[in-house]
Length: 129
Image 1 (cartoon, helix red, strand yellow):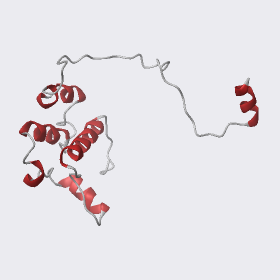
Image 2 (cartoon, one colour; image 1 turned 90 degrees about the vertical axis):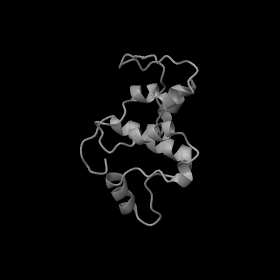
Image 3 (cartoon, rainbow, N blue to C red; image 1 turned 30 degrees about the vertical axis):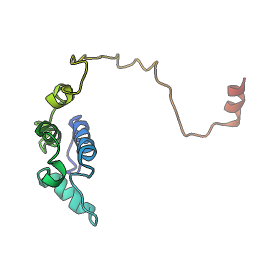
Image 4 (tube, helix red, strand yellow; image 1 turned 180 degrees about the vertical axis):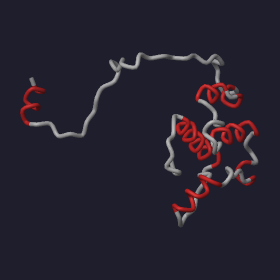
């Protein structure tokens, strides 16, 4: 996204990697207090930092998990199925079987629609009935 090139669903696993990194060590992998431009530069060009002061108590599986999610090459980044099947995730999964759940693309019956659009007086009267 930062390079303004087309992207696909691999950006979602990148996001999982950023969140996992933050949850595991308490800071963001690419950060600078003074410059968003520097954050973008680090994100695009620098390898994911794993400072021993923050990562020494974490397993190599956890580090490998995050590193695979934050691979700069979207084609080499883990797919969501690989995320769910990763050894570090499976270690804590009581039910070790991964099920593929498919939903009909047009089946939105379980979702309600919410909006911030003001309701007209006429619509309010209809709703009250």
